[in-house]
Amino acid sequence: MRHPSKPQNAVSPSVRAGAALSVLANLIWLAQAWVIADALAALLAGSAVDVWTTSLSVFGLGAVRAVLSRQAQAMLSRAAEHHIQTLRSEIVAAETATDQASGFGGAGSIAALATEKLDALRPYLLRYTPARLRVAVIPLVILGITVWHSWAAAVVLLAAGPLIPVFMALVGWAAKEASARQMVEIGSLNDLLADRLAALADLTLIGAGPQVVDGFAAASDRLRVKTMAVLRIAFLSSTVLELFSALGVAMIAVWVGFALLGEITWGTWGTPLTPFAGIYLLLLAPDFFQPLRDLAAAWHDKSAADAVLDDVAAWRDGTRRPMLGTGALARPMRFQRLDLRDVTVAHADRTLVFPDLELRSGDSLAITGPSGVGKTTLLRVLAGLERPTGGAVLLNGSPISDELADAWRATLGWMPQTPRFLGRSLRHNIGFGAPLDTAVLRRARVSPVIAALPAKELTLLGETGAGLSGGEARRVMLARALHRAPAVLLADEPTADLDAETARDIIDGLLAYVEDGGTLITTTHDPRLIDRLPRMIRLEARS
Image 1 (tube, rainbow, N blue to C red):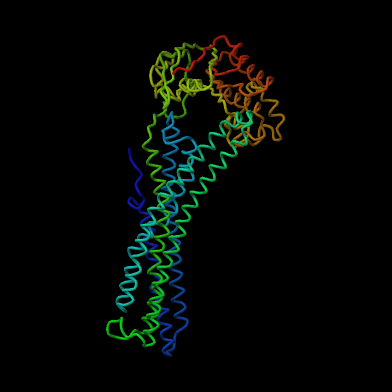
Image 2: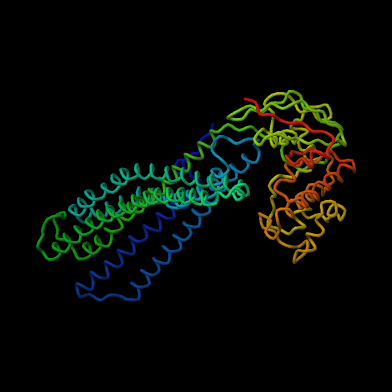
């Protein structure tokens, strides 16, 4: 299985160019410092200084430096966005093309990885690569200039400088472990949220709201503790690194001051330290430490990014089976017959065994049984959304294959148990841009729903169907399923959690579809729906 390469080991040309521009922008300060030191040394010596030339030189170099820095950040930002979007597209494409969970985690963990966790790579990609290149170039250039003027100042830099990366590495080990624990907790909290939202109706019915709130409070508190652990390491290491930098600059300042006063006569190459050299060294000393401090700050970003990339590697290592077909648009096929023969589906904790079935065009079937016995899984197998582990699903006498799956799904209507909506108008949620069929609206009992909405069929719906009751949302799902006049309708618990009147409307709509020649396959616990369908099979749990 291919693992994600570290960005610093496989940087794109844009990252290299951005890092190079960042180094060039920092090197311009050496010229600015030279102009400033020359002017101040002339003033100390009582010589005339051309203010305009000096000012234009300093501000001109500063403008060039700002432009280069801005361009470097823009290039790095585009490269970081491209890298993150590539990983995100890979995750989304793989998860939408698989028929089972990969074993990495639940939907919440995968959503957290594709969104907030991948975003943790951005500061790493923006700061670590250019900081690493600056550390490789700028301190050596400044050290060379310092050695030219004073071996004593160079010794101070050589003594203080290496302490920063050594301490940075020591702290980095602890920071990576803390970041990994934080990322795990983020995924767990997202899984908890997804599970609780999926069971929200049941939790409300049994009055488990306080326990759910307490569970979220405990989980969020654990995340807070792990986040604070990361921040404590970051703040502690930053404080120590700033101390090393301040001590190094202070020691050079003390030596330069006493050398210019004549109190210290050693430390140069046989000649007294000039005011220009002393001022120039003082201006360059902070910039000797700055790249090391930048790398130390980016090291914490690297720790978080390494934890994320470990998660990406674990996700890639997960086993997943590709969904049948390609998901491309296809023309509906002519449906005649559907057969199940010795079908089994193996999950991580058990293997589901389904009875043999034979359905012809115009049949209607109710699938019932205890919760968790595999009713929804059977619908997914029939729709070609999940591959059976054993046996075969025969469509018009031929096994459902990658070549047939897209055309078969174009023949189906799907009514999920939990209503799902797009953040668009009600009309778009039913017809996806196509004109609405009044006969379909009437059959699904949606016309009264539209009439009661403020903007009628143009009313905007949120992803949870804001503005619609549970029964109204279920009617809209039925209208969507019937919109393209499917030959076969798969309905998953179409009357669950509905009042008697709404359930009756849904049942009447389903039966009207059957009377018009449609083929209905539905999972249900509702005896009212079961009694009105000619065929029923009951799935039983097997140990």
